Image: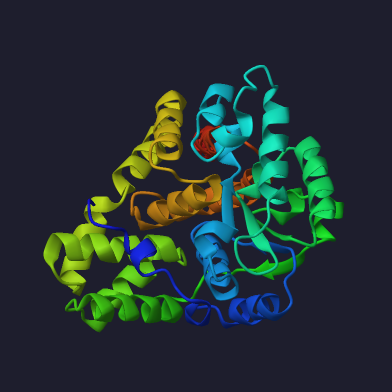
Length: 342
């Protein structure tokens, strides 16, 4: 889509967040600035909630909200970090600096400058589950030094990966997946603002298909409108079916069933690397597609669910979703022939 994304053009205000408990918790941070850990699954609105808070609390949010995605550091080379327009002012002339020192310098410098408006600024560390423990120790020291002028917001899917000294310095803000009805309310407000024809069945279909992923729901609705100029049940079904990855997921399942683990692994790796699935999200999609595939017998489906339960924790704490999901499919395929043995 070449048009501006609806997730940006219709970014919610604090009062518009669909989860009432999130609105209530963040409202406390408006009157009493505090460090926060915003925690919840992918796509449920953590980043949107933090930006809404910044717009509510800062007169100049464009300058007093600093967003740092942890992947900007840990998944990039030293050269890429050093030449990033956001960081190069802090790293000019420091080409020999170790990557760890580069990261620490950017964080310290970002925290040290004075806010452009008001008495404090906000630094957001997104995808914080990827922060190594040594960097967390450095982060703790920066938080202590600049606590009077800087609010730190740590957004993560796995708060258990944060060290206790950081968790103890932050107010927790759990962000659950919105319900289907809450997602419909968000979509209704957007299509009304866009003056788009929509029917209740189309809105419900998009909201239900998103499965609690608010970002996915909004972008699916936009894709439907771009393609069909309306958001009806038929238009949504055609668009979401085209955008989905059921065929690729089915390919992984079928390859595993036939014992071709290499092909199953490639299909999983493509979904993780190219389509952006995280491990737990792809696990849910594998189970959904398996449930819809009538050729998979009830006993086979039950075993897949049992194995999924075993691997779910590994996906929450591990670093390589492809390995864990391939192991799941391999174990499932290995057990199949045993069903018919005497």
